[in-house]
Amino acid sequence: MQHNVYIIFSMRKIFTLYVLLLMSLNLFAQDSGVYMTAKTTKKVAGIPENTMLSISGISYRLDPIYSTLVWKIHTAEYGTLTLESVNNKQLPLVFYVDDIQGYWDRLIIKEVIPGYLNAAKLYTDPYQYELRSQLESEALQFVTWIRDNGMELNDPYLQSYVYSLVAKIAPKYLFDARTTNVNVVIIQDPSPSASCYPNGTLVINSGLFSTIHSEDELVAVLSHEIAHYVLDHHVRNINEIEKNRRRSEIFAGIATLATAVVEGVAAANGNNYMPGLATSAVAMMSSAAVASVCEDLGMEYNHEQEYQADRVAFEILSILGYKQEAMATVLSRIEQDFDVYKGASMYISSETHPSINSRISRLGVPNLDRDVKFEQIVSFAVSNAAMLRYGQGRFVQSLSIIEQNIKNGVATDKDYVLKAKCLLALENSQAAINEILSLLEIAKHLDSTNLDIYKTEILAILRGGQMDAAIAKLTDYLSMLSEVDTMNSLTMLFVEQEIDWSKDMLIKLNALR
Figure 1 (cartoon, rainbow, N blue to C red):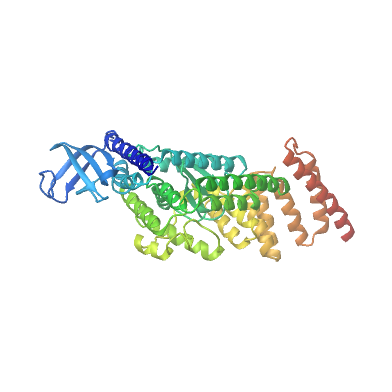
Figure 2 (tube, rainbow, N blue to C red):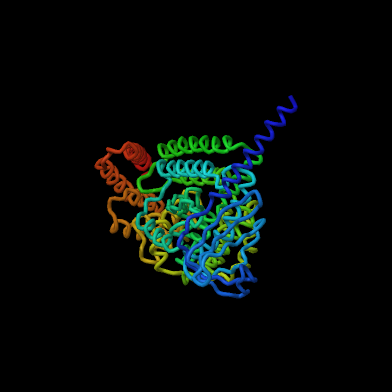
């Protein structure tokens, strides 16, 4: 019996070695058409130290049995060079690049591919295609839930603008043949955060756009998040999580959370609907949902990963001709936001992120100048963030945010109404009432069909003690409500509630005359 066990064990060992041998023979990557220059850091393959090489292509294979990466470097001067790096030692080359694609290629060669060699020692498939497929599927499903349940901000122009920047930043392909497809979703959440999911989806909070004030800063954030994706941080973090939890438990948790989010948002939409006004309930749901799946999708990054992504952003800003201190500026603005709201942000979590001041010190001196053109481009997201802050009872902050749109000449009727409502909550003087009524007149000029204008006007008139005028406005408001198209069930609910309120108010005011 012991002899038979020994034979079985030996056969398994031989089979494992056979699989590893096949891996070492067949994992040459296709020539990617990489073009860059490099300088030798020591004598290698008969080539003297400090020799410049013109590289037209690079391929590699893993040899996990001997902990070796075998590289083939195609050069114009010396033909094809075969170099080996053992135990993840860096190649004896310094790569020079002057474009974005070359930058990402260099980063993957130095930082990502060595990780596959480590994985080859633990997994039959060093590229972990099954895990990647599952992560992508779960991320896609979660993003679909976000979209299907009213959490996405409807601003096609801003989304197109962000895509134009992503096109500058993101690699066209990944050197190690992973799929790359960076896409953008902007959600209704006032906290200043952004995150990149394992399927390449950039989820950006509307609150980020009310916190940053230049294209340079937005490019810094996008570069930072895309860096997490390209550097494969999600997969590395999931591998760490799996040391304590089974994969089935991880993804089961995501599915349970998503169901709760769907039910919660449905309830919030049914009970707190106001046409044109984002509900604070939706923001709370989206914020809770995103925060809860971060760990399960490998998105709680450690200090080293955050510093690494910061450095990538810093370098990409330079390549693209933006201000290199922009990432420091973003972090400084987010720190100020945190001081005001004491809220959550992916960039300031004390447990997973290094000290924000430590990160700023590595990235330069913040430049707090504002770019009015950028602020005008992102104005709808700014409006959304201001409305959400109002819904949280943060009237001073909401007023401060919405003033930006008014100052920049891009305020909508909703912005003027929101400012009026903030003043109603914060002020109690005839001067404030006069300002509120003036703001509402501007709003009427922009869109006379906005019902929120007239209800706010009634409340302002009542604040001034003009009972007869308020009754007349209430009567007009009732007439307007009777003419609203109530084909939509939520609109019908809103109109019914407003009609009931108006009738009850008429009884009250007639008694108070």
